[in-house]
Image (cartoon, rainbow, N blue to C red):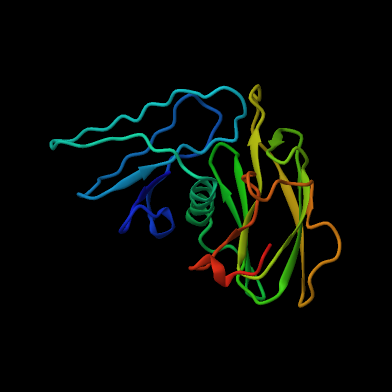
Length: 212
């Protein structure tokens, strides 16, 4: 995903310029024209293990400056959320909360939920498929979100050795309450700080959010 940086270095204010279809492949591509400005290219991957080299090919009649940048977890989450919003701009509304399924033509799905209400939101989401692998390790997840938070619930990708069309279905339920949940907030468990699936405050400044 390629984002234009609007003022400073903050990715939160960035706007999506272009994105490539997410797929299990050594190369993906997309074409776009870039007016003068500052841009950030974020390769989206849930691969664990040793780093992989990546190449960005571009053509320009003017001198272009490139630099490598290490991204904090919040910036990565912002890029993943931007992908889901861009590929599912309509989403599904539930009393002010929004569920988005960012789908690619190759069968990958990024599941995002945004709790833009003043209540706590419970989301239960389950895939049914025999050809997807899941970033949370399970096809079904249950998560609570505090008011003002968003979360990447799941990233589903076709199995690497798949040679047939990708088919899947999903079910989901919502529940809202003004009370702070007393049970576990995430199943499967996550690391709220380090994990891609940790909830992130959607408002600026982040101090306006309740503690998740």
